[in-house]
Length: 226
Image 1 (cartoon, one colour):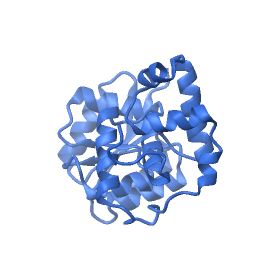
Image 2 (cartoon, rainbow, N blue to C red):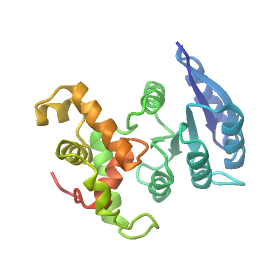
Image 3 (cartoon, helix red, strand yellow):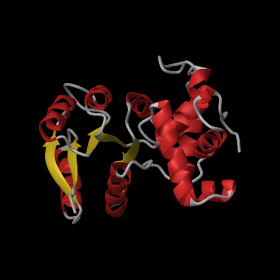
């Protein structure tokens, strides 16, 4: 089995070393490089083409947000996980718009760190459904119209979806897992995975986190909807 290739970027040497040791101890994960600032992180991705980049939000030379923008634009196959000391951080919201696939707190447990890397590498949302819903719901409530992408997407994008795909998008945005969506729609999980894949492909989205963001921006759901 090919290991998940990871780059760890943080300006604190102990954090880098600690995360690197935890991940390298996993049989299916390999840390291929470390970086102490955003510029080094971008260069490390260019040099090693990793599956996942763990990226601190606040770093010297180039901050994590700008590094995330560059990596996500240049290397769409590399999934970016932002590291932060705050569970709700304005920089994290901007990072999601830049293309990051989620975030981890720096005091994350070692098992959750490895699990998070595996989830993002496989194309799943890093955040648990309930956390995704809370995070994006608060984002929608706190930051309306504050970003260049906070313009409601053209309705034609949603018109590309079939009825079932539209229902799937709404359920993703409500924080439901694949199993819960399958129960709601009375279909198999395999069918749900197909619907999710079609939604992401048709809307040009990286992963489920960005499907949630899109759903709020497009008006498919509204903050607080159950």
